[in-house]
Image (cartoon, rainbow, N blue to C red; front, side, top):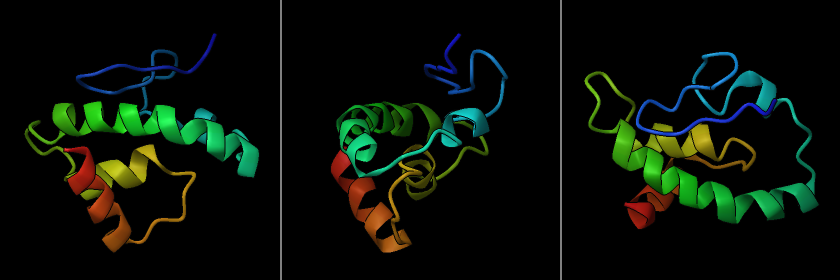
Length: 87
């Protein structure tokens, strides 16, 4: 089974950890794989921002972007810019 999740809590259906979970993050992400992940994970990140930012004690949008786009080397400033675009 795949380590998948959906909102509003965004926890892994298999291991129950915050998604994307460590198992999914351990998948190698070379340049080709990153290119295929960017569109899908951008869409998912937009949904996650809407779901998670309103949760009591939930992460801020920058942390959500860094969490869901873990495969990109984003600075906090870059993650903030992405979060603003995805809101």
